[in-house]
Length: 209
Image (cartoon, rainbow, N blue to C red; front, side, top):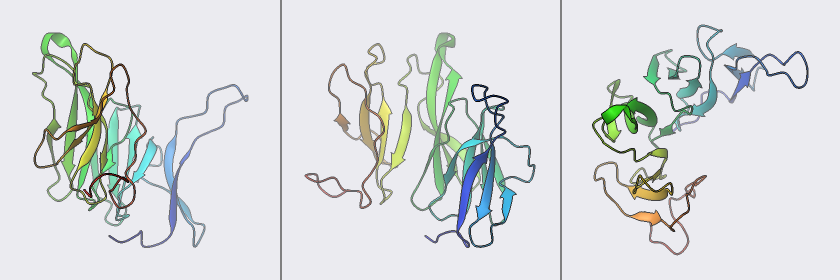
């Protein structure tokens, strides 16, 4: 994996409110070249909105969430190639360590018009997207969210509600190829979040992943 060709910083630019208590304007993603100080929009249309910027590990791709159009916009900073991923979840997603795949959530109308959360996977080698976890036909919402790839790419941590009538959510570890790996944090009546892998994909006291 290589870093961006030049040192860059992606950020959101938004107009300040008329008063300190007034809301700011719509966020627009931009990049500044730290070597030259040159600043430019991330997307060819400078009016494109987006927040929650996420770099791919190899520095070639950048994703941001367009809340106005309920889309995740992904652009290749070298070629200009773009992908739009429908999502009304309000966040971007998680890159695989090799930058080939991207997991993201979307909420769809399921059985009896109940909202169902589905995790999708975008493949940047083929340009295709498909369902990773969940089905629109599910009768209950397992509320899959916050996927996080291990540094080795062999496992993914995510939060889900294994017992949908219960509000508590657990952290599960799954393999991208073999779903159904064990739950690792499941104390009753609690939900978990804000988890991050250590740089080697290990946790003290646990075997290597």
